[in-house]
Image: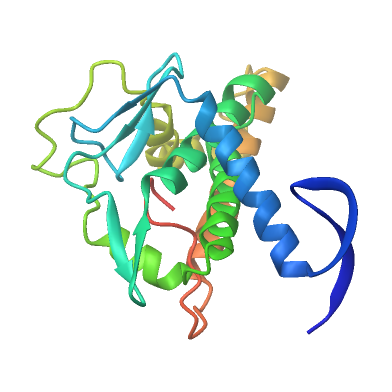
Amino acid sequence: MHFDRACHPAAPHAKLHTPDWFVSSLMLDRALDAVLRRVKKLDRSHDIPYLAGYSTDGKTIYIDRHLPTSFKYRGRTIDVDRFLIMHEEVEKTLIDQLDLHYLHAHQIATRAEEAAVRAERVSWHAYDHFMQKYVKSVGDERLKKVPRDLDLKPYRDYHDWDLMRRMQKAIDDGKLPRASPALRKEIAAYNAAFREQHRDAARPRRPSGKRQGPRKPR
């Protein structure tokens, strides 16, 4: 195994020979802890489409009430809340602070979530398989207790792709001549994100089972 010189997390000025994966896992774990400390409120008393979400003001992270807090993996008990919280916090921050479109923010948040899962030496495939068993879609009859302040932008954005494509075609065909440059840019950006999302979903999966993620629409 390759070793590199790196700072020990408890003694930043002491140089130690440590494996690269050990250092990156420690740093990622600390980053995850920093994100978790920022959470003002965690709510597990509601039904949430695609397992997790956030309030419109970003102060509450919602996790579906029927999702177990952990699962067994190779004899270990793996807590899942921290990974879901990281995803939702990163996603919401990117949307609100950097004005990213939902699908772009979602892709980045999913990559961060996957990295955190793998840093815990947990298979992404096993984690995703566990999550999929509890997913409730937007039209699911089990959604009986949805919070009033749940941010619906992620669900609205995803399911508007057909509309966005129709609008793009109308612009291209000259049927919306008064469409402003800003609107044209907005629609084009959404469609580009949707195409990227659906292209990723259509790619053949490797035996390792790497996926885009278990919750909000992929």
